[in-house]
Length: 357
Image (tube, one colour):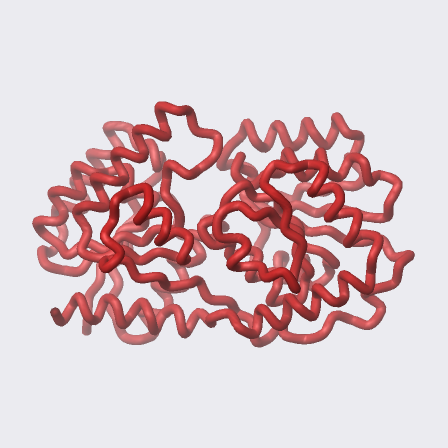
């Protein structure tokens, strides 16, 4: 049985795209017969304190030498000195969802520190797995990474069960349009801009449901709730917090439009997931989003452009036939996306090559 060590920070069940990627790859490898030793380094990343760093050292430096080790970039980039030591004991693979310094809401000093630490950590690995061509490009351009050590493995989707046309009554112009946003309440997801963009549209028929972890960045959550109250949208916007997979499936099934005004995405798994349910998309051009959401599946506006976001929302709220066309485009795009089985096969090919080399 082939062995692999998979290292990540925090809780593997955290409802984010990055953790979902990690979970699905681990599950797929185990189904294929790999023995995956999963190790959580605990909380605090990407800014671990000295106690958290020492815990990581004590755990990772006592593992069996020579076993291939995959480290999620959220942890790896924060532990450059430990990466130097680990590279002497294990072939290291970095799994990068997006560079740490590209997160929003950071100070200039934090950005500089993360750029330096992640660049040093990435110099210790034998392979980088990036979640999109955009992430690969950013690593090459900003972190001086050699292109030949990067492999792009796109996230998969569970698309087949959901590839069905929207109900015929979906496009009635008098219906209230159910908008859905899914994402953790953090600065990068752009909820502040979304609420402001909806305020001029209060005379139209719409509701917004927001589902996502509200504990990761309390200041963003407080700002979101303040914005809702400031714009008098309490009766129009529902903030659910994190939801179960079953609840999320129900939200996708009963929504009309998916909207998330992310300022940047390394890939944007949630957009791919929404398209698999046939939802027309409203998003931004930040990061890899244009590569994930084609023009015939959604409307993309510049990041943080509130008037443009308002215009896109108004168009889809008022134009049911256009929503229906974008819904068909979303399903077509979803049919071209990789499945999780395919992503696991690609991942397996990479680690098998390193294991037997």
